[in-house]
Amino acid sequence: MAAKTWNGTSGDYSVASDWIPTGVPVAGDIAAISAGTVTASGGTIAPGTTVDISSGSTRTTLLLSDALIGPGTRLNENAGSANVLLGITGTVTNQGAVNFTQSGIGNDFLGLNDVAGGGASSFVNNGGFSSVDAISVIQNLGNNAGNQVVNNGIISARTNGAAQQLLYITAPIGGTGLIRVGANETLLPAQAVGAGQTVLLEPGVGGASVLELADAGAFAATIAGFGSSDTIQLTTPSFDAATVSTTNGVSTLQFAEQGVSVAQIKLQGAYDTNNLSYTVANSTAPGVVITTIHTTVPDQPANFNFTDAAIDISGKETGDVYTGPVEGLNWQYIWGNSDDVAIAATAPNTFLKGAGGNDALAVQGGRNVIDGSTGSNFLVGSSDPTSNDTFFVDGRGGGVTWSTIVNFHPGDSATIFGFTVGTSTLPLTASDGVAGFTGLTIHSELNGAGTGINDSMTFAGMDEATFNAHLSITTGILGAGTGSEVPYLLIQYDH
Image (cartoon, rainbow, N blue to C red; front, side, top):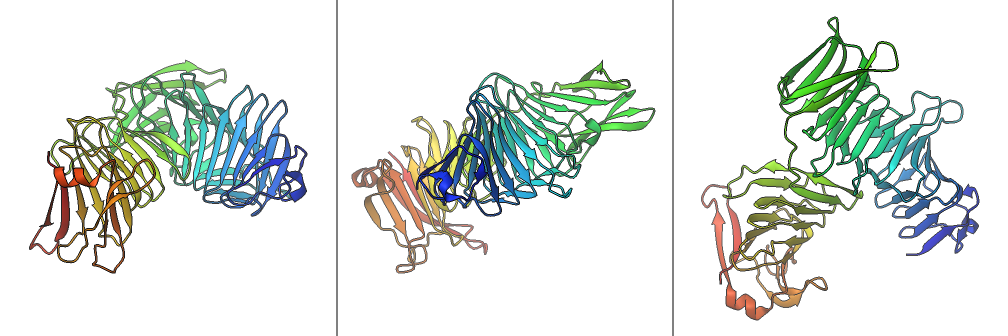
């Protein structure tokens, strides 16, 4: 890995002599652009490169033309005292992470330019686009009405402070993705938003999520998470009636003038005229009104915090009400893709499950169940000595997993599913694992000696003497005789 600095002129990203030290950045490099206008076409930016674009007293620009922002690639834009622009010409597809932040009075821009000859440009987000503690604008800079954002991934706007921030989008949005709006954030789409989008007003404490629709008649997305702290503001033609209907868990608030619909808002959940209210103010445009919608539906609790490490997206989630067989659990959050993720429960009595990535899962007090799935996982139990946590490691899917268990204490248990007595091996290694979290480790070949280790479990901070003195091991078969048997090994911290 090397640090590369652009020399401050305007030129082509692929010219080696314009970088200090000489050489075009390659995978793993960190490239810094703090002045000038830099143009990158096609596959010029190597996959896995981090490009930091920042401004001083003058604007800094990176122009992408028919380019791919590949997996593992990060474009980090930080506006200082002047604006920063990420320009888009042709089709630019993001499979990595584009992150906007702000450290001065300048703003962050993603601008869609017309293609020479009149063609349209598209920013296709299949990864993560985030605006954090910034006023950011996704703007149609050209005259082509076909310039658009296609969001099939996640667009996220959030702030770590109390000041209201803004993500302003003046290009139409299509695709089948998610737009997350955090507390103390405002999302203002000025053009059409397609029916394939979901706008999530995140649960949070101490701030409102605000959605402002400059053209409510062109907004077809579904709004999720609308609670009593949040605000939805519409600009529409005048109307004389507002009705609510609910179908398949989606409530539609429709505004009409003399029986003709002028706008409708789809809200995920059960809303009606008893829990929705709105105020109307005249706009400066004749025949146009600004309507502010509120609800008495309580804000959902923020039971979980997450960070998707693959696309640099963080947020809060309520999770789902737990309905499984384990008594005493209230909430669950099951990660839905193979990205590496860190999830922390902020409420007690939860079920946390990762997917196929390398995950870090942490719980609070009470009773909890943690399942890291395959990959290399950190499963962090509660530090409360009165809590009871259950850790699952499942080796039945054919993948390889190594779970490091932290805070394993009396009352806790750990289960290896797929462990068959007489076939699976159970060697104990006195100390193994990641530096700082080493401890007694089980490296099991579930399919028998010589088949390869596919299931490992490290008890961080535990030595062999403690394991032998305080832990018990039992084996069994769930669903014995049913045709769906699941062999297991259970480790309990008894005393």
